Length: 128
Image 1 (spheres, rainbow, N blue to C red):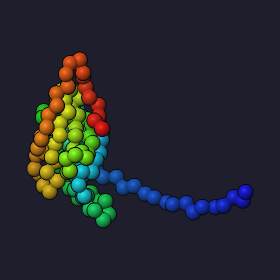
Image 2 (image 1 turned 120 degrees about the horizontal axis):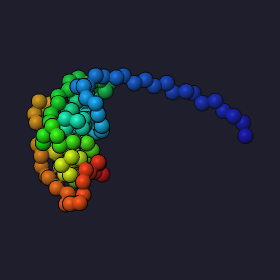
Image 3 (image 1 turned 90 degrees about the horizontal axis):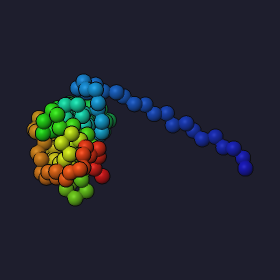
């Protein structure tokens, strides 16, 4: 069998600064032009506007989900609630369904559903 040479696809990545944090965790895109990133130590949800054509970061807004000590961690785009995201609060043992309010970076995300996990469940890491 003869060897064939395939062209090498060169790709590059551009890094953009985010608000300083020791544990930036997960990233999802619930709507075109919007990325959400979780930062666990202060339970921050970053709403990031990106240029849909280039993927270039345009603006970032930081929002605390529930309290700075809740431990926002897992993010998963909901299939049943378009535009919404399931999140885990690791230190509160809760799952939340949030509407990030995609059209307004400054708007606080709205909690649509709250599921408290029964004892002895502790610290949900992610919801899928």
